[in-house]
Amino acid sequence: MNTITTGAPVPDMTPAAAEIVVLVMACAILVADLFIPQRRREITYGLCLLTLVLAALATAFYVPRGTVIAFSGTFVSDPLARVLKLFVYAVVAAVFLFSKDYLKDRDLFRGEYYLLGLFATLGIMVMISAHSMLSLYLGLELMSLSLYAMVAFSRDDPVAAESAMKYFVLGAIASGCFLFGTSILYGVTGTLDIGQIARAAATLDGLNVHLLFALSFILVGVAFKFGAVPFHMWIPDVYQGAPTSVTLFIGSAAKVASFAMLVRVLVEGLGHLHESWSGMLAVMAVLSLGIGNVVAIAQTNLKRMLAYSTISHVGFILMGVLAGTREGVESAMYYTLAYVIMAVAGFGMILLLSRRGFEADELEDFRGLNARSRWFAGIMLIVMFSMAGVPPFLGFWAKLEVLGAVVDAGLTWLAIVGVIFSVIGAFYYLRIVKLMYFDDPDTATVMAAGVDLKLVLSINGALIVWLGIFPQSLISICNQVITAFP
Image 1 (cartoon, rainbow, N blue to C red):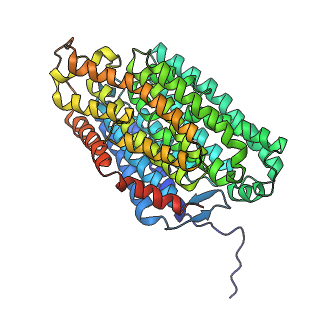
Image 2 (cartoon, rainbow, N blue to C red; image 1 turned 120 degrees about the vertical axis):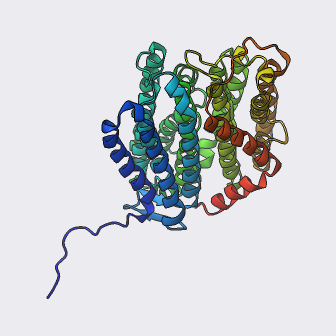
Image 3 (tube, rainbow, N blue to C red; image 1 turned 90 degrees about the vertical axis):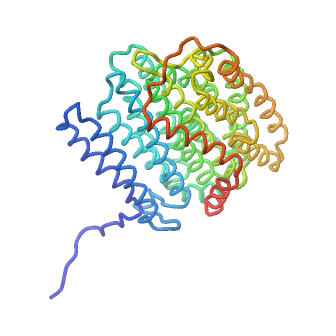
């Protein structure tokens, strides 16, 4: 008996196993959360952490090794995606754990926060594995819409609502610019597939007016999500106005998505046009280093100071990418991972010192911390020294890798600019150390944070020291991933 088959063949879902796990679990938790009473809300919290564990297992053991392009060229599973996703799971799990006590103290411990975090994580995963400008845009919007809602999560806080509105309006403009640039790029190349765009770009003149026009608009969208100058105006207000647990998410996991977006579009898709976009990136890198480090000196709010610090660190990441070499991309990836590790610890310290009715987000709130807790003052010192690039901590090696790649690419002047602004930026990091160790405390309040937060924060601080003493452990991972990168 003959069997007649109709319709299109069912695609292999294995490369997207982790995304499917997160999507199915998020939808299931969304329904289950409706029936979970508020006093047992930790069930939702536990299920969200379980989702991240299952996604990590799927990524590590179920997703095919090597590079696999699926779903008609819109999705790619490669070593870069695998490493970045595993890193994102760990970061998001730490964010969820750090946020628990903070949300409870403010009567915000609701399932919506964790579900929005899962959907934002799903958007990040889609961006990391995007092999089409369309799938990249869909992942970008999924992440962005979730983050807009998270910023406004504290519905009774007018400052958070204002920050969310500004984030939404400016984010919509940036997304529109990215989509407009993508449409022009499609008109020039005739495709949205990043691999095919790369092949088409190899045959195009880098001075093609239409191509430069498309590239400019795409860079606006990428630079906004990264927070590079002059598209940085949302970062200080959103970082300061959003609940600290949300600021932690935006300042850590979302940066990995921005790096993936930068690499997928510029390096993988438009790498042959390096001479056309490297100048634009150089301007943004120098402006980010300058404005980020100089303006941070004038800040008295720690979250706002860390926002400008983020802008300056973005300048270093852009420096690595604009070098246009494999070593440069490797150093940019290493810097991104290092920065996220440091940022989680930095914002984690704010959550540690915060309590019901009190936000420890002013520099003065860290005054005399050493007298209150030598251990956590030491962790904050490690974070600040590492962000300043003091050896032998993780941040020093991250800066050194980027500077080395830039010098090897013949951009010595840019490396000198990076060093100068790093020295200037060290001032505002050392100012916090001075407040902790040389000033008297204004309060003797005991830290009310849970044991789990203190334990993970301690591990985070130890990790910064460990990766500073043995930097090759993380550098080798970045080297292997980028070596396998097309």
